[in-house]
Length: 369
Image (cartoon, rainbow, N blue to C red; front, side, top):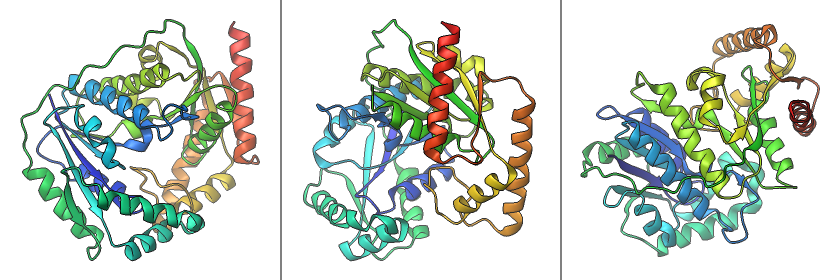
């Protein structure tokens, strides 16, 4: 039994950072967080679902169901809800989904978009049209105009709305089970912070999807729980299994998983939860110089910013501490336990690392079979 508090709006308006701050400020109930984009990472999107609405809907429904069964009382979601899709999403937990749409005047929205995505100037017309579409097509949601508001004030107002909203919690609508009994191949990538598991793993998924539908799961993005429950590892395994099952139902034939094993209870625990996926484990390594360069890019904001990333804007002293920890992590991965394969990403481009991962995973599959 739970409720869903959804921070939505057009691209660039600030919904992800605002939704994250709502989650991190949650205190009164057992709460989870997810960015809706993390539920649409099955590529390519099916021709019958060109904007991945059905894929994201089914993924969220499955995730919410798993979290509800584990005792989560509220899920904070951030991400776009197009007006024509709102009713579908609301039906996931009837009567217990609240949409709060952030908006901003087009000039301010454009400035925000370019401030975060200076390399995506060509997307400005699309972003502006999407904003107009949202403003034209209200669906009964709450609207918060952020044109003149700073991030702190937006977060403060959203937290007040979330804290004061106490609907009758409901049981999410049940989702069908995965009908397939045949396991699909996949790979689980581990490595020190900045070794490249997420970046190279995502690229590996994209390259694999050129020949057959493939999907990507970042374990960290399905591990956000407040307060941290005693059974957190089991909750995370159930959440990841629900998402993986949705990807299989939507035709995925290869799955890339990235992330540390400890938050999900270890390698064996996740492999048991993902029993429909053959999951060899690969370790990515990187030299201290490579780790330092990649961490510097992330600290400077020159990398994709995901929920839970605490590197942007770190002080030089804190950055040195993070680097020292990453170097130590890399050494521990080198010492064991043994993985099914190891890829050194130090002198490889992202594409070269992705190709090495796919080749190594295929070799493991052939060896086992």
